Image 1 (cartoon, rainbow, N blue to C red):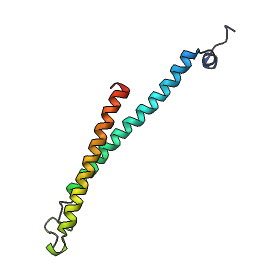
Image 2 (image 1 turned 30 degrees about the vertical axis):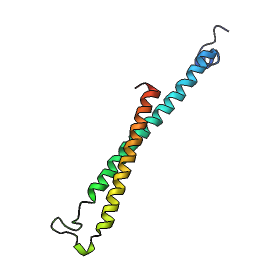
Image 3 (image 1 turned 135 degrees about the horizontal axis):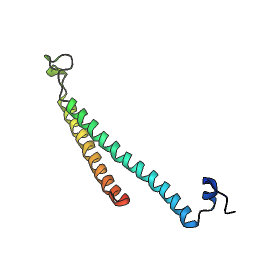
Image 4 (image 1 turned 135 degrees about the vertical axis):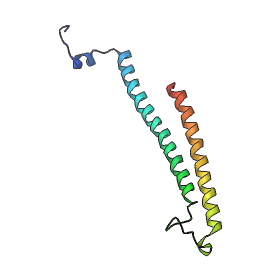
Length: 109
């Protein structure tokens, strides 16, 4: 049997330690990738929500020389939406910070 070579034979002849290590590496790589993507998705959500909040300040919807008519501006809705977006940003930042810290603990980076 010593003349049996190739990846298939090597895979069959692996010892338990090698099998466990190979499986562990796959699990770690998958978890690490998904965790990193989650942190990146949170960063993107923060950026988009900040952009939405900034866009609320554009009160000249048709041209750069016009403004929304005061009778068409609902200050209460504006304030509520601004606060709501601020809360979303804060929550995303907290989630991002928690995820980033945990990523560093789990994956040593």
